[in-house]
Image 1 (cartoon, rainbow, N blue to C red):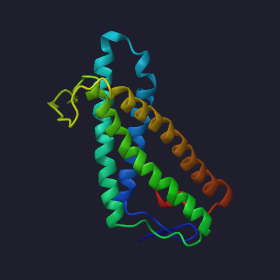
Image 2: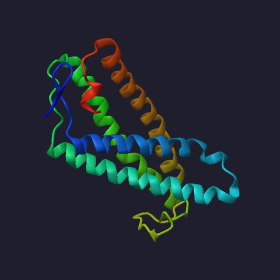
Image 3: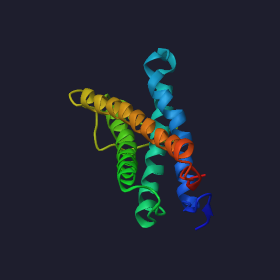
Length: 177
């Protein structure tokens, strides 16, 4: 592992690539989800299809990230006080969980409403759940709640990055650059 600034070891390049790929995808898919109900009816289904297709890309990236992280634990950050390590770890694991559950709940909700997915219009994605209008509102509520949860967790994550970079100046940000 290479070192930067105050000697904090960096993340490996696959972890960095997966992290920044997730960031780019979230910068697209989260705003799409926020405005989807305001999209004109004549393009709404296409908008949903792109949003949901990108959501499945997020799911795939997050599953790869999870496997990579389990097989390659992040570099230690011993200079960080234990309480901050616990908070950072909790935010990271909650983000992983939410970013996996979010596309799953959205995919299942869309199917439950009666709209099966054709991934980017190319091929159908099988769902374990068919049309079920009784459970669809619950799945939609879970999906929306996860969206807000992810925004809060991202705010905490970015706040932590700024805390480390601006106030502590401890090189934490450079571990992921």
